[in-house]
Image (cartoon, rainbow, N blue to C red):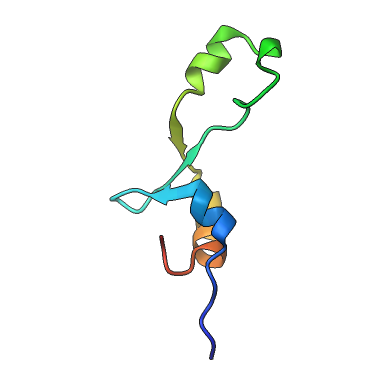
Length: 67
């Protein structure tokens, strides 16, 4: 059986924390920020931990061997 390939797009977008959770950059911070208020921009600073339902899909299919 051949090895599964890691999806390189997912490997660039996600990092695995020490406890095994999936960390990602927040969305909606690249352009068109004038339509968002200051609270939205401030709260979406930095990185966030992905939802549990998304982690199972990304980890098994896109990152079969971790990072």
